[in-house]
Image (cartoon, rainbow, N blue to C red; front, side, top):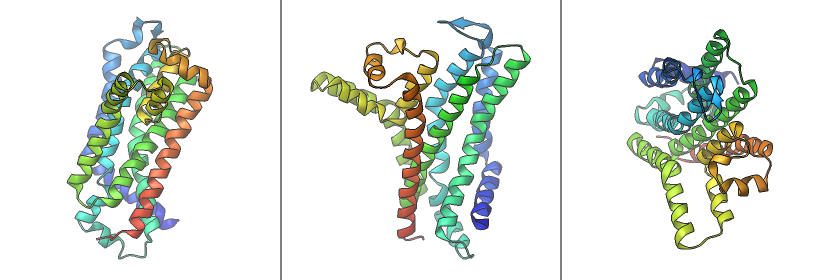
Length: 275
């Protein structure tokens, strides 16, 4: 366990020195600052006001930018070490493959998760200072959603990095996955529904296995339990499960998915040529 923590600490220390971490932190911290400057907490739109509206806007933007930030900064974690011969150097010490791989996973997860949750803590602290009502239930649920989302795309990134030797190829694959999950899957599903007259329930199920989509719907359901903004789609979702069950699934499913990708990545890394 000592070697595992040392690898995690080294990866965390290396990430903190990297320029991408500074940009990553400024993006999320800057979003919160921009919302306060724009007076988001002092306005009301569609019944949302104060910190509730700020958290709603923050989470909707996070849905788009958090996955790509995690993918492009993590996908080169192992392949980059292989390119620079750091992997060969690290394994010359008495460190097992399991300690190296999972140490990198732990260290990188801390790096990508802290700025996101720290920005939300700043928002809550500032709101409390201004005397605004703090929606603690939404805050803690968003914390869980962000935790699960970070774990999902971290696992996907390490899975890609475990079998791709070139950093450039790894970045290309990561960007394609982000685009596919963000936009192409919705466009493809709508086309299938219109052209093939597929069952609507099947289309919605396929959409819900997309971690970005289930994250988006769960975030909306915290403010709009009836999902009225989604129209007829809400009937299929809420008839199948209750709102509380859906939110719980939206945390557990991405978390399990990320762990599975990370595990399969480790199995590939364990059996593949290291250099």
